[in-house]
Length: 246
Image (cartoon, rainbow, N blue to C red; front, side, top):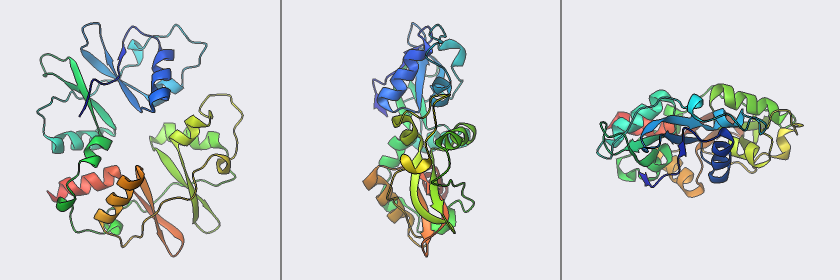
């Protein structure tokens, strides 16, 4: 787990939460009271919906309830909880009775500590998602951002013609470009997408996919065969497959 995590108090303003999430590139922040007891989490989606003019809105009303993790909890159980509730990070408290924040555990933390010798002998095609939501390079970024907020995805492959992969656009690409603000003029996807896109073959092993994601610090890989997008695999798919095999 990460110790001494960044947090925000329930009495502080949403504008501060938004600034922290942007500065540190977080997807969520633990919310605590004056005694540093965890009362919930606030997400990137929550804060980016708040305009800078609403400076008197406090965090308390936006805190989402979440499972409390302790330092002695089993990593497998924690990962399953994250997968089930589709949350990428959870607060770690001293004990379930105490409730005081002592750390954060994220899916990235778990992914980076995978024992490569325990990865099941499977191929990417066995666990990938085949029905992939994609976007066009000429489409507006605003539409991609709306889909990210609605579906909870972290990014989309960018394709042209007959499913030819030409790049990826992620929530961080959009935030860094300043295109997540409501009412801003929306550029086309091709202006801010990441290229070239890292990719993996459906016949590649899970170990190869994990090594590639770790090497480039990315959370998802388009699956490409004969220059055509056929699927996508992410950290949740890979971690789920590992713990299922265990």
